Amino acid sequence: MGDQQWFVMYTTSRTEKKVEQRLREKGIEVFLPIVEELRQWSDRKKKVQKALFSGYIFVKTTKANLWESLQVPGAVKFVNFSGDHATVRDREIEAIRRIVETGVAVETDNDEIQKGEQVKILGGPLQGMEGECVNKGNKDYFVIRVPGINQVLMVNVPRKFLEVTS
Image 1 (cartoon, helix red, strand yellow):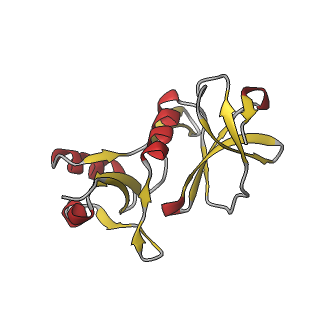
Image 2 (cartoon, rainbow, N blue to C red):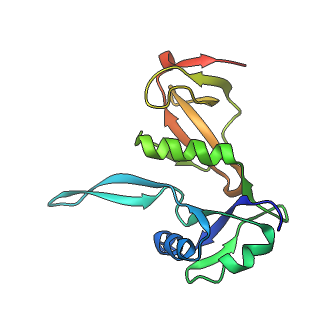
Image 3 (cartoon, rainbow, N blue to C red):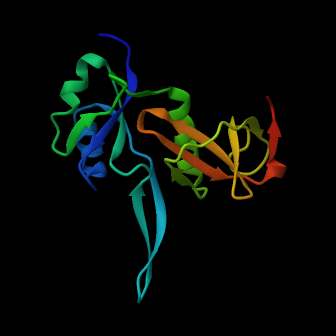
């Protein structure tokens, strides 16, 4: 059967939620991080939900079953990273899940971000999380790297809540 891992699926534009639903209906474990964004129109403001990583969802399956997951409409391919399928570790998925659930403001970036310090978060909604912190534009950001899709998740955390562990 092989071990289940989190693979990164690329979907057609703006179909992430439909693909997630179709995979769930097949009994496949999926994770689509959704964030709320306040959109401003000329006459009103509205909260919209959008995929954190546009065009990507995470699928927990085995290598042997990747093909099956691609049979749903909207699924394009699994992301390859230097010839191998990109996978994301459980702890990164858990960290992303927690960040999304707490609703803290989050940014994504696909720039090359320098390696930061190892920190532990001491206060605020993400208290207890450990990971990497970088300084960008005079702000401290807790970052989670998602190497398979070359994305970095950034959450601004005040320096007073950070304890350097490295």
